[in-house]
Length: 424
Image (cartoon, rainbow, N blue to C red; front, side, top):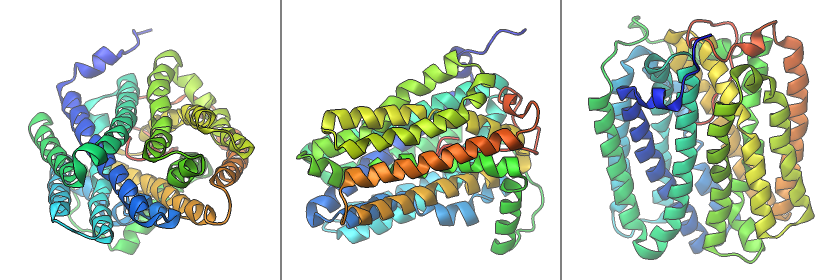
């Protein structure tokens, strides 16, 4: 048996280091601006629905990008797609520096900026298996997911400090700079590769949608795994109602930031541990039980705990969400390289649509019911769905299908799963 790959092996790859550093820059900057805008809108309006809509503006644009732009990363060189997306986002965020801009206009610019996140993340997720293979890919995915979550923690914490000490204008300037540096890292640190698909004819949007859904919903096993990924809409509800939840407990902006950061912080710790100590075979076997637990844990908020206990509940729930790592790796193994970006785009689109819709629905429900009750009900529904999917997966998974996470990515197209949003 060959020796297991290590994180040192992953970071020894020069291209991966450039990809990783670009992720550090863009994710931390994005989180800073998103959280800062949430705080700004809640401070000006004190309306949980407006706050939820603002938070959803960081997610819903993936509908457009996932449906109509992700395909570009299969038809155009993926490095070029990432550089262009960084350039466009840099310009859009720089426009936020215009003085005295209404908060509605800032949210609109955020919406436009995030629309280009879909093709960027599809290209990044699709080029990663070309840079890392086998177990190195699984470890690299864990590194990127951990980085994504760690940068969310740093960005969320930085947003609270930024609002207090440097103001919104400088926060936006920092974010624009992160896109500029990210584009430079990708342009000079990743080698050029030809487009994955050589056909020049671009199908109509409806044809793209039809072909993409055939790809990801083509068989019962694929549909089941895709829905496992989309469970994230249920167990991230605490993020969507973080402001009213913390305020109900008597907390201020720091308490809001703690709720937003708690889920990312625990997953930052759990993901590398899960990858290092749990073998690929076990990761996929534990996927169903962990999915049930990540939703069911949120039911405990029905007891109306205080802030400290709530943070523990949210952290434990998020830690169980490491099952998504197994789903992510299985997804890449089972999708052909020439369709990889489109598959990632549609899978991520479903995650984002689910999260955005859940945030808006939860925020609206929080106008009538307590935020704690909203989170508990959402977690309960998610746990029931996860249990059904677990039973379904055991029925439709073919022999050996649960043990494929360690194969070389991109060589099979019969079974798939779904990545975490933005971290494939």
